Length: 527
Image (cartoon, rainbow, N blue to C red):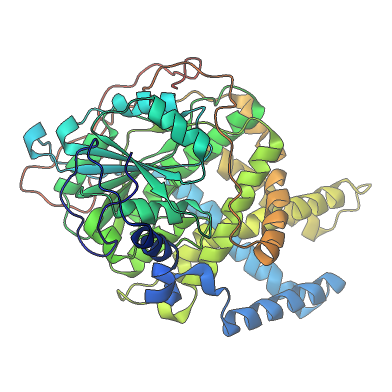
């Protein structure tokens, strides 16, 4: 079992080392690498790291905004309340318009150029694991189902050095030469991006792919990512595959989560790619061009949504991200409290990313504005999560208050209904594009799901002050859907699907799906 190999995050990695070879780094060198994994980005480009917290200007603006909110809450008939209402109405209208556009415009998946096995690039897959012994065997089964030449694939399992249970489980599997277990030295912050940065030193692939412990990627996803990079120029830094849940049928909460993910990955992200906006990447099934990833400094170990942050950082550096069609299935939380904990981490990370990318030092590095995209993606998600429950309650109270609801209450209620309708339409469209069934009852009950976000958002703000870098880990292997099948369903084939010609290089093309739609596998999920 390996725990080190010479390399650098910001320089090309050495050639491949067989999985059975032992190249043990001295303890001091391992500690230096671990320190760089945690502090490298913050030291080299501090403007891009969440470690510094808010700047003075940002803190001042936050205080002023909070003061205006308190003043507006003290009385409705004043200019502060009118200003806040106008800003909220503008933001809300823009979100509704974005969702309508996402429904109307079909995804333009990244073009690809078909490659023979001998022409496929070497790929490194990194999976950061912590307390995942229960799902490790089925993770390996899913990885073994990947359709990619074994001699061009290396898999790095990044395990914390004190996670003895998962280390023992990995040893017991007797993994073949493609796999290497990378032991991440102790240190802080104890986050996934720190582990990814450390493992990146041991990667020799031209492409680096990130998966999570419970992932079940479509077998052809990696091949399609490699072919999409081959059809694009060097400015394409990352390809995001859609995500959904293998246990989406397990309960009402998982069905609602499936609708939310379908909306995001099959409707909104493809729209952002069309608009050439930065993509708030998901935490898994990201396929990176390794050179671009290293030039960007890897992941920010101090940001608990390192994925979304990296999407915006790549954009600021002049790169772009795109989307591909084949799904990865994951395990959704089946209980409310684990869902709240997971969503707390996401929203806390959104706040961190907003703070980082609204600093002056992170803008216009490539001469491209990101303020609008930042406001309508991460900003809108955070604000809507915070405001939804109280605003919905106020609207409902005004409308039901013995018929005395004011014209403003009726207007706000109309806005709320428009938001629900747009979100339901986007979710239904996303599920159809993913080839997944949807129930009318689930669409109609979406308003009962949204208030949970306000609970998570309030908890996220509290943690942002008290525990900004705490990683609220999601437990895996708890679903009753434990079938061993490893194949994610393919999305429906588009009638305008096409390959790029061998000499083509295009930013985006017509939708391209690897196979005809499979039957929904919700009742027979993967490992």
